[in-house]
Length: 154
Image (cartoon, rainbow, N blue to C red):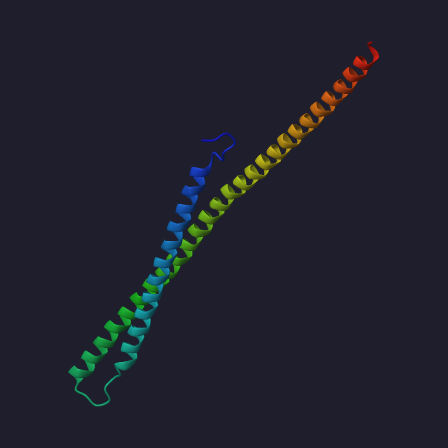
């Protein structure tokens, strides 16, 4: 690694990868939640479509009620699965938020490091310019002193 390089660069890359994975998990969880919501709607439509027969034998009536009860059970299960999927989305969003916070923390450290490095480089550059200016001034003073010394000697 170069002198003055950001030593947490690998950690930052890992944090970005974790955030990307968390984003993908959120997308999958949202897709699962959407599919679960669609299943709830489909089961609800199925249940609504199975009306109670007005005039039917007791066997047909019992079969229809049993089918409606089974559909109601499927609807209840689909609602439960939908709630779990929504909870999964919320959980994945929390993980994404945590991953983003961790990434941003490392990015802030990098920004501080970069700012400190720039200030250090600017100070070193200013010192070098001051040293050059001082050395040039010193040489000019010595040169004028030596020139005046040589003029006085016969």
